[in-house]
Length: 276
Image (cartoon, rainbow, N blue to C red; front, side, top):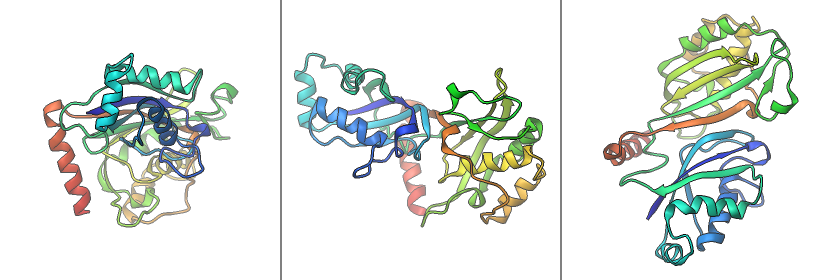
């Protein structure tokens, strides 16, 4: 049995998603809770491995149950797969910084990582116009400037499309930096905070935080909006802008195709990664 888990977390006190010996991570915390419920050594596969300090509102993972875990679930007081979410919440205790909102049997061919067709992130910035709100400090980055949101939005929109984003990625050996940036735009929320909407088929390491950092340089008047395309096409990391802090970044949503296309999408994604 493969379960799909829909979850959210405040990344402030986590050292990222991926389990690491001796460090508190989202994966390690959840797998520990699931192990207490179902036994064994559960291993989650996630749609997007977030870095330390990054939050998630719409993260997706899957879990393959062993035969022993299936038997244990079937013999429990709440044997329905949908009840696992509530049981995880019970193990995590009151007011945890990670929550599983829903668990269910995954459709045939579903893979949380490889079946995904896009991921959407949000980045929040409080500039001098918005002002500093201490209640939002864990999910909002502060920039001490009056930012030009119109210039930032124009710069962001110019970067959309299928491109090599090596200039906006932290390099990893044998990892491609070619991505399709489906959406990238900025607006001011009602409270004055600048909000970036960033959607792509996938993201390379630190890509979103680098993109928003470049846009902040535009908003400050240090870079022209059209210069961000020039930086992208140079394919080289630059010191012309700063990569912004993780605290402002939240994974909002992961998109999947129709159920009958899940397996084909996963196979296509694996084949492309192998070729790269």
